[in-house]
Image (tube, rainbow, N blue to C red; front, side, top):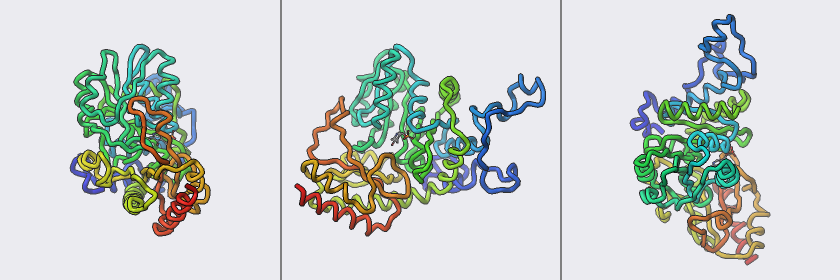
Length: 396
Ligand SMILES: *Cc1c(COP(=O)(O)O)cnc(C)c1O
């Protein structure tokens, strides 16, 4: 969005960065897109070249021209010092966390985090002797009371996966920095077009590039961007030690997706909000969890810190047995039932926060469904949901 340009400190608007940066046609015989580079070995001409390590590319695992165009664009969009690519969004999360946390350390994670982020903390960090504690996503400056001597990082995901609590990042960042710990933000929902965590105090921003960056449900990738040289070096070292890299084929698809990110996000934003507003007026709906709706409890924080909203929100249906949820989900004609999100097609999936929440138990009654609004005709989507709500009511 061009209105983001002044804060971002970019010479150009983000639309121009997305369309023009990261690619150098003169180095590719004039072809518009940087092609897929596949390669492990990179050749050196002399022993001096080999030992000097000054060559632009040294070994395929450390990157190639296809991966570099993605990291350059994301670095500019996030206003970061640097960005690395990871093989998936989850790998981006694990690299970011492992760059801060060692045995004996401790990390605070929002209770609203993406479930596999929690599984990594509980199933891996704890095994290596690091602590992971969960906090109320609405804690704000109160995070100060939880930060202990060994706390190295606070993990923020805003809005939360499935439940869409918006976090007070500036307050969390101020309290965390005062205790010398780092703030990691999962920014997959808003993308850097609508939320700039580094400008609001974060040190590290991760993306599930699989979602909005790729945009077509056909590739996996993650990115980790960092605010300064020291943080970037710790992240790159962690990536290198773990052996994580992203192949040229995947990076090509991320780059291709990024070229149209601003127009896709503008459409997703408009459509998701329209469907969310329409759902609010439906009798089977008790609540729509979309931060851009004035009815959302964190609407004011969202309005203060974000410049737009994403494709994804949840709807809480009035309490009804599992058969009602099945009646809703099993006969959808356009919405499909499946994991992930960010593609051109609409998706719907049940969410069960009561099964994982530990800091703030989820007590809301009713069936919670997460919707991703794609590019089908908007009236067709509403008709699909209207039929589903009717089936839901009949099966109650
Ligand atoms: C999907 C997702 C991830 C993980 O991305 P993958 O590419 O599927 O590993 C991380 N964070 C959020 C918020 C996500 O939705």
